[in-house]
Image 1: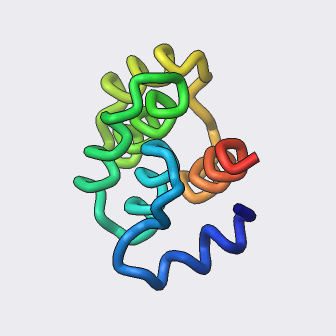
Image 2 (image 1 turned 60 degrees about the vertical axis):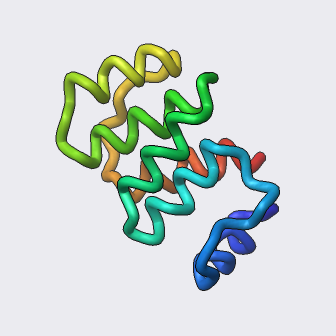
Image 3 (image 1 turned 45 degrees about the vertical axis):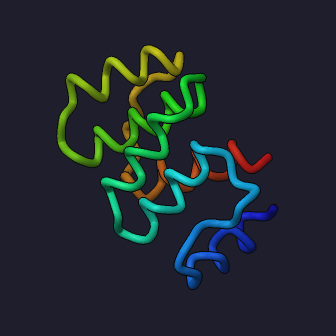
Length: 95
């Protein structure tokens, strides 16, 4: 799936079935549903889920919790905007 296809799918009510939990979390976040995004990211116990989880807690404003999840994902907390981080994570997980 390309980034454009991912974005185009946002008109739907549910994420595409083939998305993994981390990408589905980003999908729900793009739809403005933080709770569903968080629930989805929590279901992925690997590095991808931890990365999305970190981003979501950064977005929430919980920097200490975000820091924990960035460490679990083996990522450095970014200096970029939330929009840029969302794009970077999404592109990375789609590739």
